Amino acid sequence: MRSAAGDAHVRTRATRTLVSLTGPAGNIGDALIRRGTLRWALDTSDELIVYTGDSPDVWLRQLGVPDDATVLRSKRSVARWLWMLATAPARPVLVFEAGEVPLHRGNGLRELVFLIETMVVRLKGGVVVRPPRGIRSPSNPSRWLHARAVRLSQVALWRDEASAALIGDGELAPDIGFAAAKSSPESEARDELIVSLRGARPMPDDDWIQAVRATAEAAGLRIRTVVQVREDESRARELASALGGEFDEWGDTDPVAHEESLRARYSRARLVISDRMHVLVLAAIDGAAPAELVPAPTRKIADAFAAVGILDITLDAANAPSPDMQAFLMTQLGRTDQTGERVEAARRRLDEIEDQVRQTIRMSRA
Image (cartoon, rainbow, N blue to C red; front, side, top):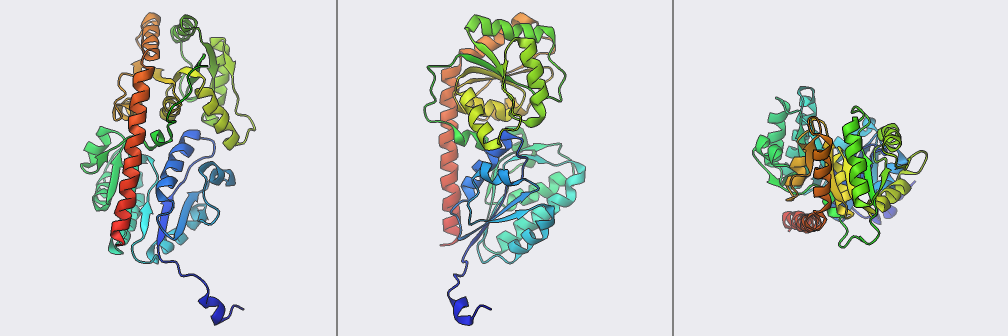
């Protein structure tokens, strides 16, 4: 049994930060933006509480969660998360995770809980931080509840103008993935064209295959397909065969090691073609030219890149003949320097925002 004298030597936690970092270990893009979210939360309080949901152990290593953090695992720990929020000392910090915010009709209860969490933190004199996010499937009452929570938050950021306009509050900011940009990515050995597409989409048609092969030949590039999301592995294998390129499998490789290998590939690429947003973000921050070339693309990628000044990286392949697709890809190859400038500006802007977040927290405790 611990004595009263022993208890006296236990340091009282003066401040507490709670941060949500859920996500699948099989999605490198999710790890990228959750890692950026964690960076904003680190060293803001004496105690760090991290909620990871059902994520496996390797997810903690992917994000770099500190050993002294209190980690809440699985959905069964939600009650403990709420209790630690409700019993937090004065002026706590609550950091929501970056990424997509699903606001479909079935998410009303979830958004109500988030609104209550926000109100609790504000009543305690604390700070609520919502990193750059994008709204998906907006509907009421979820949208209305989310808008109320945003207006109560000191920091609320959107990675695209459409999301900001939908809520009517908050500021436009680069996707937090751009914060990991290299200050001067190497470019001497860029001799590859990389492709990474969603496995859930139909296989590209012959015109698409011809355009990509012709672009690689004209630019003197080798074609390689990679896997950034585990569920896309079969599609990457199919594409490598159709394109006459090399295939990098994920297989049983540890996610941390796979991310290192993947980024090394992007650092050798001149052009990366994908319909996954954070494939293109990682490509851009590692110095490659990003291009979205699929039938009927959504506005998600175009809007998020437009927010950092990178325009016209998307072409709808549905009705574009092969020569038009090739011309589009060759245009992207010529925009590397411009893209690099925009990426560096986005990185600097995110650094400024992080400084502002930390200053907001310091002022709340002054």
